[in-house]
Length: 463
Image 1 (tube, rainbow, N blue to C red):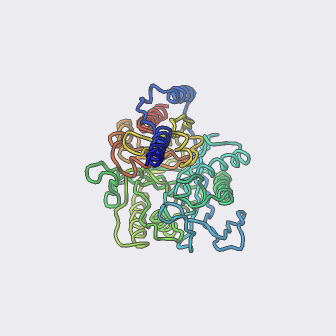
Image 2 (image 1 turned 135 degrees about the vertical axis):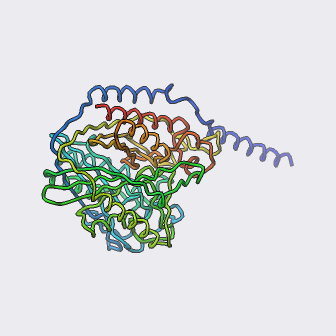
Image 3 (image 1 turned 120 degrees about the horizontal axis):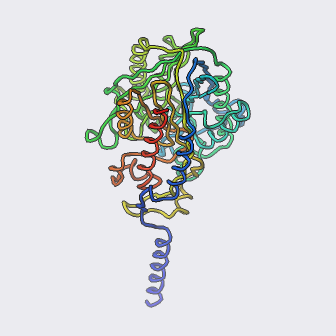
């Protein structure tokens, strides 16, 4: 009996020691008292002091490459996008299952805008996010081929949950995107960089204009329902080359989750239907950028792919009507900021006030790597990009601030890194998916990013 009690006591002591090592209290240090804030703020102040706008004639370029995989090949061939098997990304309950077929094709699409010697390229991709490993390789390839880097590239994704996976390492990364495959990363980088090069090589004189409209029938607050706010704006950028070729960039805040984890065919979800509708009814290129989707879900009708079609084509028809009346300008003013940020360590919570230690969290979650925030002024539009599922509730604050200055404003997600969800601070203690599991970097990270985005849009709007 004494031996048994000693064994039990020893086990209890061992468990206690393990828990003492593995668990830490959540760190509530205000961001403005941290080293990562001060380093980033100094960087921002330096960039802001050097920023100025350029004004001149507009040149527009377009690019488009397929990222539809060729499935069931005899062997993997990233040069052609052929794979023996490839998982879909988006839902953990798929458990890394391979795609069974192609329902609709996937693309990466690019719009290049040049004013004088300043070139900006906006990248939309039919992916869950723009994977960090992919964007890092794209940056390198574009630098080698075109001579400019991350400061000129504005990434996004449609956030479809039925696209190519296999691009993230780590337990959680592979849970949502399937087993990591470096050949998939190389193939995606090849096509994304190719679309960027195509757009820049296609640059020719043109015009650009902006609009937005409310679409409350197609979006709702997914975090707190009717108790929360909703940003129901659909944002439009329309471009036309003097040759007559036209393009649309559209951005909306509803999550592209009309297809559930039971779907194993590739699909662009409702953004795919949106783009195809416009490209078959008069536009040469239609691009979709996921907006501030972090607290927003869709409203639609029907089931499965009919649900995707309903919202996608309805939004496209509304865009076509509004876009037909957009005033286009051949001379505009632009500027942009690309800010590399320092950030806090992982704070993956196991309860409201307790978290895994940083080492253990790093074993579960993918390495974050370099993180950027970007803001750009395109004449009367202020556009910020973020490394996250960014909250539409927060975006409303920026839109109101810019509206008072005479600007439209928009915030898009998935800009080439990923740091989880960024939601209003008031929701941090909710025991929900967005606020608990996907809030990766602690309670100070949300206000830190919100502050930086606010500062950056003020800077670009004043230059």
